[in-house]
Length: 269
Image 1: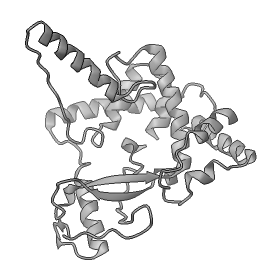
Image 2: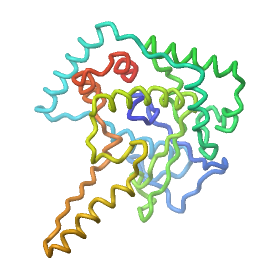
Image 3: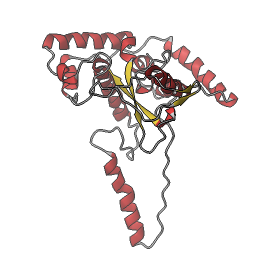
């Protein structure tokens, strides 16, 4: 689950220029690439793909490389040990995950809409449970589920001639997303039990949202105004923070936190 993009490390991203209705997207200005102006659909695809590929280059700073090597050695040793017992799934959990699917979401590479998943017979749900439990036992995430249909959307106010002006949107298959929901529930359970999140963390937490977080600085600023004192704030915006997550470093942190090893093994797949 490479950065949750659905694109395996060994595969070059493929950009598909179709919208949700299946109509081809046309741009008034053709994007540039290192090969020149991209005119045809295939040339535009290559230009956008090349730009995405440059965003996933490994860090080559010598001091950082030593850290990479140390983490690599630690993970190799960790993955040589047997994993802990898996917490298996059941039909009720899978059915609940299916009910949570949004029918408005576009389908992935297989083209099966979420509305169809909601009408699965019980026998098919049982088969999904068997597949999900097999993944939890073997710690092997199917390669086919890592493939995504990637659409490039022009960012507001950006130059359409530059490939970097387009935001890639990955459409993953629903079967993989259902399993991710099953695995996420196990991760969040461990996070909650170990109290690993600070109370100030609002994003990606059940029952909280970023709009609620906005009330915190508003309340503090208002209080400082009432006290006739200054209120300072620092806002950080990390460029491509999600896309450039160091996967091995993340796995290494999970091992240090003593996460159940079956979860770490499965994530690494």
